[in-house]
Amino acid sequence: MFFHIVLAITSGVFCGTFTGLAPGIHTNLVALLLLSASPFLLQFTSPIVLCCFIIAVAVTHTFLDTLPSIFLGAPDEEKVLNVLPGHKLLLQGKGFDAVKLTIVGSFLALVLGVLLAPITVPFSGIFYNLIKDYTGYALLVITAFMILKDKNRLLNLFIFLLSGVLGILVLNMPNLKDPLFPMLSGLFGISGLLMSLFEKVNIPDQSFDETVEIKSTDLVKAVFAGTFAGTLTGFLPGLGPAQGAVLASQVVRKIGDYGFMVLVGGIGTVNFVFSLVTLYTIEKSRSGVVVVMSKMIGEFGPYVLAVFMCVSLIAGGISVLIAMKITRVFAKLISKVNYALVASCVIFIVTSLVFYFSGILGLLVLVVSTAIGIIPCITGTARNHQMGCLLLPVILFFLL
Image (cartoon, rainbow, N blue to C red):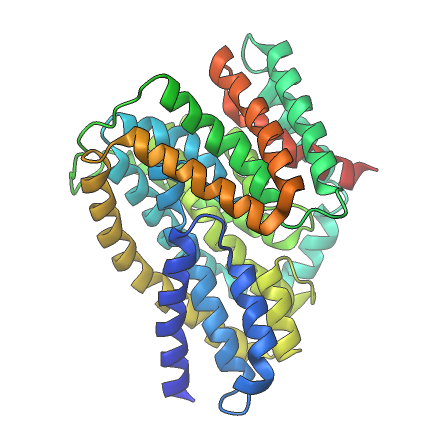
């Protein structure tokens, strides 16, 4: 069993590295493929080992998926807000620092989340019942504050509602597969890449300072905020890492771009860890990966949960080393290649993946969301208001 688990972690880290770096390839796809192959694989191993493989894939993915979102502008749902300050830091020659901070945030939040898991287990059911009826109101207050905090209130509201209506329509399209991929790629990815092409952006040489200047208080606040938001999204239905990032970033103020990168880096990792706790305590699955695990293993006891937590830590530790090595390579190459060519290739690849996964309808969503995504770039409005595409459907889900 021990050898099988080690092999599962090793192969899972390798697979998670691939899914993290490849735009559009999600861990849910790997989990579903493994589920379809499980009748054959279970002849040679146990469900626990297969679940360890899935955990290693999912945890590693949360460490590596920040690279394409910052260096290429091709985000997934968990790291979509990384594009905003991350790309700004990249244009300042600090892309290496930006990714490094998300990796630090992921690992510190992972450690904190695992340490807190035994404490949350006895109270998770009570906590879930207390907050589930008030989540919509909390999101509504946070959204109102986000819209009203600066002078462009009407424009902020317009972009939020426009993105929100888009999200409602897209998420309710019955024949659209993987709706988030074309919508988020257009709003936050291709729209920014097109603006970079029009503005003829040049990527400067990236610095490789081993020490990143971030206040210890900002680091602590960001890690705890990311852990709390990741815990919240792990428990509540309809609330994902992207919504959690918006919520946490509005509550924890004045942590700067560096602190924000730490915060967003930690949320996705903790979200997955606490989705395991959720499955164990209240028997609810909050992601496709955990749904597959629940079908494979059914009910499990505290010993198995402890094994899963240890696997998460081991996979996270290995992922830090791999992510830092690959980030250094990315940072060295990004300023030496033709950025216009890179941006054009990314647009072509993402468009091709959208067509492959979502068909003609997905391309239509991509075009419309890209057009909406260009509006904040032209008007100078904060692009985080485009998160209305996810926030408005979730608010309506809780309140109606």
